[in-house]
Length: 182
Image 1 (tube, rainbow, N blue to C red):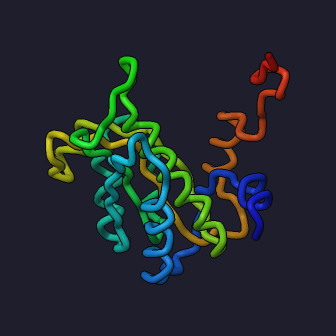
Image 2 (image 1 turned 180 degrees about the vertical axis):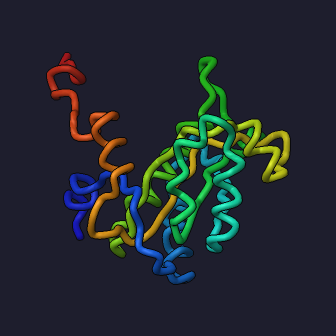
C-alpha cells in the first residue's frame, strides 16, 4: 500500500474481528511510532499496550462516564494508550509540545498498521483522571489518546453506523475553507 492509499483510505473502525494481531507486527507498529519526529527530539511519548481481551474489557469500564461511549473497545484484540511524559515536554512561545509530538507518533503508528490490514479508531472520550488512577500512572504522565486496533469486521454494526452518522465522519471541509495562500 502506498502513502496515498494509507492516508486516503484511513477511517475510524469500531467493529473488529476477534483475531489476535501477531506480537511481531505490534512491535513493528510501535517502532513506527518510536521513529516519529518530535520537538528537539525529546520523544515524550509512552505507550501502554493491551493484548488480552479480559484486560481491555476491564479497562473499558474504567474510562469514566464520558468513556462509556467507547464500550466497543472491549471487543478489540489490541488497545494502545498513548501517553506523554511531561519531563520530556518542550515549551516554546507558551505552547506545550507534548500533545503535538505524541499525536504525530501515534498517528504514524496507526497509519503504519494499515499496511497489515489493521484498522483503528482514535479516541479522546475518556476521563483522564479516572483512567490514570486505574492504570496507576506516574503524576508526570498525561494520557493523550487511546485506540483499539484490529482486523476490521466485514460489516459495520448499528453502533458504528450511528456514531459515523452523528459525527458526520465523511464530511470534510473544503481546501478553500482551510487553506489561505499568501
